[in-house]
Length: 353
Image (cartoon, rainbow, N blue to C red; front, side, top):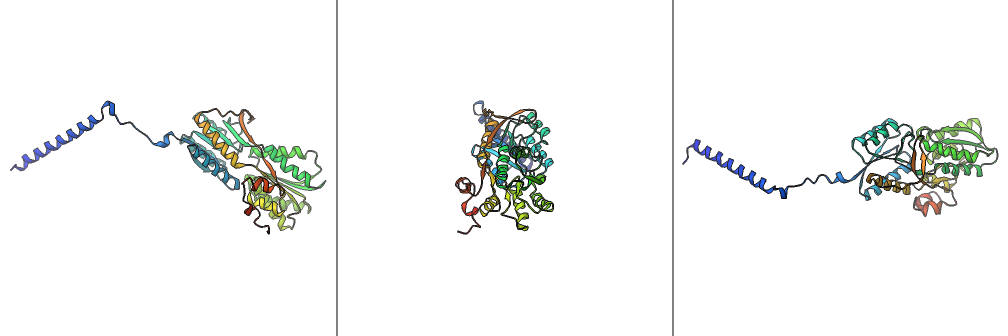
């Protein structure tokens, strides 16, 4: 039998021996030919794309988001979507966040086309590619601008007004916000058509932040000027919703020419019901899919091979331009329903069989 002190010493020596033995075996297993390598997180090798949306108030933006994210993820990218809710400072903060997160590409649906120049410069200095989605970023030297032919959007809507409103008829124009560069292009298309039209614009407004209520107010303000309204040029279908509501309250819906754009479901329903004359269909599924594909190419450093350009005020920016289509009651089925943009049951929901 060991005395207590001697037994403790033996146990300590035995423990020290075991520690040395384990350490030696571990070290030997990590010889030069068998050094374990650091695998890292799989996401480190993925493409990271940040997308900052103006807002999701307008129906079409939700579809853009879903198609873009799905396509990008199918191509192996991870997408972080942020919603600025129409707030310029919030959008700038989101882009700053994307820079801090070292995104490969930042896609911007601008709240204000002129407000992002400084933060875009910062992103580009960090080696991040910039895609201006649907709305051009002014004096920002984006790597790509992808949108529709917005002058043609204005042309299609204006031609509907011109063709269907009688000579010397009274019209209202409700454009989008001046902060949206596309609105300027739509107005250009509108003015080219209306240059020789004999029509009276009795009220005109730019809807701040695309607030639909401004269209409702515009119709009621115009009625104070004249009880006769023959046409309402609405910058999008959301504005048209409120314009038609005001017309309905004054028992004028269906007798006034009303235009819009985006082919929202409610607008398509109004067209077949007869309270809205037309909308401009912009195949956003095609736009969002193409944008995702280009974003992934930019992230990989591949040549996007875009020959068309648009001047942003300083730089010529590569421009992918898609064609819009005017839609009325006559081609609703062919363009919108057979094209798969809206379901027939939904569009004709309020039409008796």
